Image (cartoon, rainbow, N blue to C red; front, side):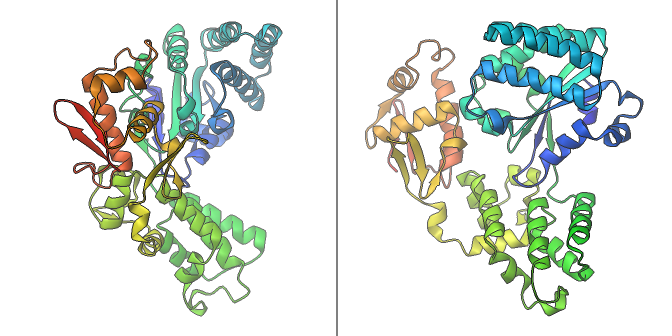
Amino acid sequence: MVEMLRAGKSVQVIAPPGVGKSNLLRLLAYNGKVREKHLGKDAGRFHFVYMDFSEVRERSLFEIIKFILISLSYSLGERKFDEEQAVVNENLKEALEFADELIFFQSLKKSVDYLAKVRNLYLVFMFDRFDDYIPNIDSRFFLDLRILNSRVAYNLVSVFGVTRPVEDSLETSIFDEFHELLVGNHVFLPVKDPPGLAFRFSYLDQVTGKNPDERAKKEIEKLTGGHGKLARLSYEAILSEDLPVQAEKIDDIEKLLLSRSQIKAALVELWEFLTAEEQIDLKGGSKNDFLEKTGLQSNGKITIPLLKTFLISLPKEATSAKLVYDPERNEIRKGDEDITDKLTPSEFRLLRYLMQNASRVCEKDEIINQVWRDSKSQEGVTDQALDQIVYRLRKKIENDPDSPHLIQTVKGRGYKFSG
């Protein structure tokens, strides 16, 4: 990741839930020794601004710009950059007097110009949990980011913490202004992080005052595949047992772990972040490129034995549940799961329209005119673009996207929903 940042590239840090990408981003933002280790003599010049976008998931672009400016000020204070923080705070104070989006953006531009050009800082905006903001994203977000990037001769780059590539979650038209700076710059975090795992175990030993048999730790590491969140929860479960915590004195560690609601919730979180196609491949043992890159699979085999046992217990209906649109909540559910947040705005509107017109053929022109009624949003929505959106949508909802059951193509005309 650091190599990409040094080259002036924005980066996507991709990992399944619970692997620890937030820890990685926070370490660079808040730990001086980590920066020195990876950046050497440049550690003082690189300035990381950490932002948790789950905090602003439903906020307007105006609120996002304000959030970035406030986060920038806070990050300078954390590093005791008092002079730089004073300048940014003055810009922030001026913007707050007007409470206008344009004024706030001007203040952000002034702050970035000062820090990059005058103070010679290399700014790195870190947008953690960016997936949470995607359902409500405004295309102007990427335009504004490109403007900031261009103003300072590329002395500003961005890191997006996501569970899957941005280009798989957004239509190209939304991030077109930022496309060349972002697409393909992927860093997939490994599921297993040995130093992080050792730290978690050591810390829990210290705070609980217990010192389990090393075999218990190795068994947990094996069962969880080293997955950070699962390993931590599993170790806490072992430490909380009234029984002696030697591995050989626990009849069935796996059974014990799967009986804990927090561990089951973490496994469900992993399962539900996957698309329908990925779920089928993971459960059926078919090699899947995304699963291999994220480390959930290795040569088609599940890398987390605990997850494999959990999936065996799932009913078949879990992967073939009925799709239902709830007009009161404006949600689309697959069985008991709300899949709304897995869909981009365009995918959601398209699927909702097809479901509302189930069992009849929807012509392509009709779909484009009805789903993208706003003439501005229709720009770039060609027949080919519609086909691409349908393709991505099938990957998220069909058990077998290559043999679709829910969204059927009617050659020469359009599509029909028959779920």
